[in-house]
Every structure is written in C-alpha cells, then in structure tokens.
Image (cartoon, rainbow over all chains, first blue to last red; front, side):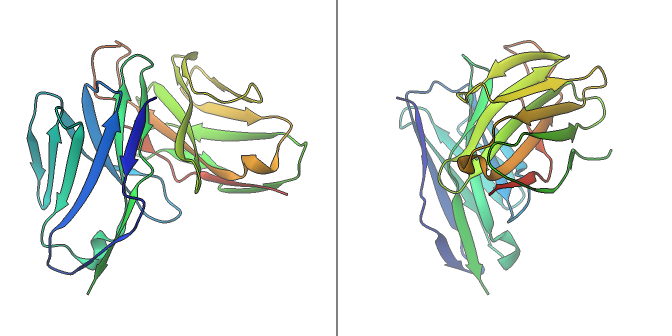
Length: 112
Length: 118
C-alpha cells in the first residue's frame, strides 16, 4: 500500500543548529514533492517544491533534497530560530488521482 | 491578494445533524480542495473541485459532499454527523490550469473550520 512516513516524534534542537526532517514514501512515483509548515490552529503554508529530476533545492535558510532511489526527501533548516518551531509536512502529488497526499508531519521545537 | 477564507471558524454540532462549511478561494484560483485533519489520521484529502465539477475524490463516505459555484466559491456538507467527524476542515485553492500533467498544484490553505460533534 502507499505510505508517506515522517517521524512522529518531535524534534528538539538548539537555536543556531541545523534541523533535518525526513520524509520517506512507499509505492509512489511522485512527479514532485512539497514541504509545508503548519502552526497550531492554522492551515499549512507552502514552503518548497522539488521535482523528481532535481536533487536539491534551496530557499534562504531552507534546503530540500530528493532521492528517488531511496524514496526519501530531507528538509533542512540551517541556523534555526525559535520562530521556526512548527509542524512540517511533506506532500506528494499522486498523479493517478491528481490529489496531494500529506505525511503526518514532524513537530520541530527550537530551544533558545 | 486576499487569502483563502473559510466560514465559520468554529462550529459545534450534535450527532445526527448536518453541517455546511464555506470556502472562498484566492481570486483567480479555479481549483478548490477540501481536507480533513485529525490528530490520529493527519491531513486527508476529501475532494477537489475545478470549474464547478468534482475532479477528484478521496476515500470518504457519501455523507461528505461538496459543490463549487461559478465564482469558484465552494461549500462542503456533512450529513448525519458522527463523533468521529470532529476535526479541522481545511480548504485550499490552487491556480492549476486544469491540465493533468501540468502545474505544481501548490495548495494555498485557509485557516480551517474547527468542527466539534457532541
């Protein structure tokens, strides 16, 4: 069956360190993968998209990698700040059904 | 541009009742998708509408339905509410042009409607 797995345990790191979040998927052939940020009580906010033919994408302090052989994406936040504390969701486009499928998200807590 | 708006923000209903939630997409966006988010199941896709037509549907029972109007505004309805329907219902709009192989379907989410079923 199709699965998108993100670490359900919260990730706690110190301010200034690099946070690395993992998204693994099974039985998908995604055309692209997206990362979203969600704060409590709010809808997710789009951060980055990476296509299947791209290895890495950067945006300011954010970096995403995509390894279609390992079926994995890594999401990095460098020089993390307490304001980066949130839940981060990865999402794949299921081309057969034209619907984004989301992982369950990983909560990041950046300690000052 | 104004973002996606959803009304109401909070709703309390009892089992057996029905509910209608409303969503106004970003101006110019023709695709509207609905998601249910619960702590146990995460964010799950309900359905997508494009130009007043349901283009895609998730694995939810027929009690969940929706529609889209000519101005792209959308409503979703849940009939015969169950306790398990308590969730955050999120609407998202996208500017995707409608071709299945093009676009990136970046979803712009509203703040959600928090539905509590007692």
